[in-house]
Amino acid sequence: MKPAPWSAIVSHDTYLDGVPWELFARMRDAGGPLWVDEPDGAGFWALTRHRHVLRAGSTPRDFSCARGIRLEELDDEELEARRTMMEYDGLEHARLRRLVGAGFSRKSIAAREDAVRALAVSVVERALEHREVDFVSAIARELPIRMLCRMLGVPEEDADPLVEWGDALISNADPELSLAVVDQVDTEAYRLLPFRSPAAVSVFDYASRIRRERLQRPRPDILSAMLHADAGGRPLTELEFRNFFLLLIVAGNETTRHTLSLGLLALMEHPEALRELVSPDAPRPLFELATEEILRWTSVTMHFRRTLTRDLEWDGAAMRAGDKAVLWYIAANRDAEVFPEPDRFDLRRQPNPHLAFGAGRHFCLGAWLARLEVRVTLEEMFRRIRSVEPAGAPDRLRSNFIHGLKRLPVRFELR
Ligand code: HEM
Image (cartoon, rainbow, N blue to C red; front, top):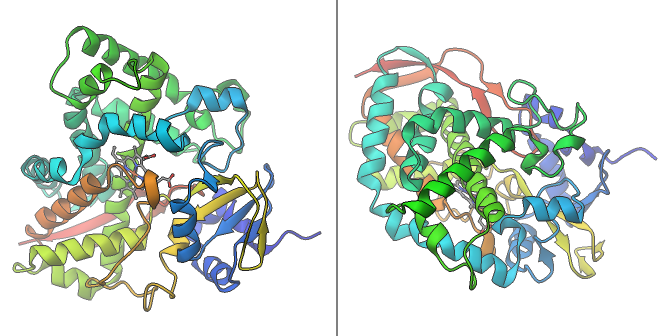
């Protein structure tokens, strides 16, 4: 039997030419969740409507994280070796999230605005010494990792290796960034490592060293607090800590970077919106709205997966316990049922109930930090320039999971 056209959303190659928006639109129009065959997996239900994604994300009783949150099937041994708070439901998840929740709350992050701004100013000013730069490496790649290092209490001179390891992990389907390309070489030897990537060994060694240091000499940082907190009647084990550290580095770094780069690309493709923001009297609330629209428009973590715990029938789709369900946040964010003219980039879109940060208990831990970094970087960049335009074609990441850019050549005109 011929596979349904939807199967193209599984192929990493599909995304080299950009997000398959038309295909996602046809999937939404079909109404209910659609079954998608996978070449190397059991297949899954694709949820592309906003209301389906929101409901699945908000009902962990029916849509569990415990069998994994990526498309890949994991056996019990692999799951246990790689488990983080993302792969727990209920109390276990709450217990782990509590260890870091306060440090990333809206209030704690608001108190860091000056620090984020100072960092943004130094990164932006250094980049603007050149008229033409690759925006990804000069600005977008620099800021999130350096801020994360400061928050976690990791020396900033370690930012470069951490970025490289993070790239190799999350971009494990792109041959330019990973030696162990998941769908092209045999990665069996790495099956107990996050993302099936050998780069995880470097991150784990690094995390173990930090753990030893912080256990001996605690400091006023998030990692020390995690290690000395009560994680349910006991401290975190070394494996738990290493996986936790890796999660924070990966989740907090690439995502914001790609949001910044794709956000600038969107603005350059919408010159009127760009002009409004570059104007010297663009108010802060406009940057706040613009940040939300950039998040909706770019949706850099395109999907996360759940597993059904019971049989459910939604809009004609007979889903069975044990089936995988994939929540396509990026498709839900263009659902006309919720967003009028969803394919229009609207700087002032309000309300903007996008799902770029997910929904429910696993709602992004770093949402307030990411919002702050995107807004402040744009504010500081736009206050120093008259205009910015493409200086070459953007280079897209090969991934069905991360919507990202490897390069974005731009040319600035300074004030
Ligand atoms: C624009 C940037 C970001 C985007 C688009 C994004 C997206 C997401 C999404 C969609 C989820 C939900 C996962 C699921 O449904 O299973 C999530 C969870 C998470 N994010 Fe982010 N994220 C961003 C930035 C950050 C930052 C800066 C951090 C900082 C450390 C971070 C840390 C996390 C963590 C730890 C989780 C897991 C939360 C849990 O399981 O309770 N993210 N993120």
